[in-house]
Image (cartoon, rainbow, N blue to C red; front, side, top):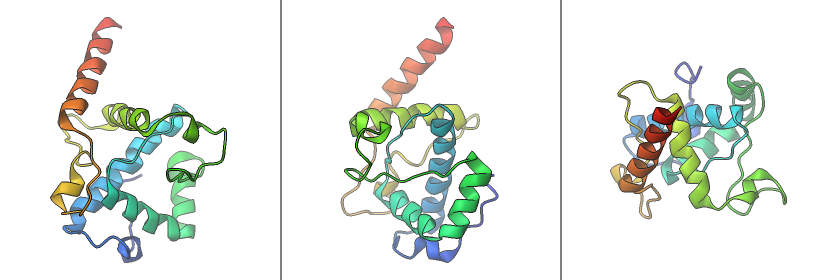
Length: 153
């Protein structure tokens, strides 16, 4: 579903970073992570400013975005920017650090064998002035914890 998604140029209207193909790959990876999170009723955190801007652009293409959400997830994928979620919702329950940890977990559930996630350091590759990202050592620690848990089951 995400691979076949046709993203119009309007998605990148407020997302000037290049190469656009890398930002688009990050957006597609993010949308795949969201599928795992929605299935498990989890809220995940956005690790990339550039991808966040592309996602905003996609959301503003309201008819396309709504149709994509219905087809890909069976429900609308809401965007809750920090401080913007309704009170007493899952999006306000956990700090961003925990939401980002769940993003790494969601990626582990949707990644194809050998596929690398571009989200963790994408902002550095496209020269975002104040990059977000996730420390690679922390990603490795989370992945190691997941591998240990898989061996126990």
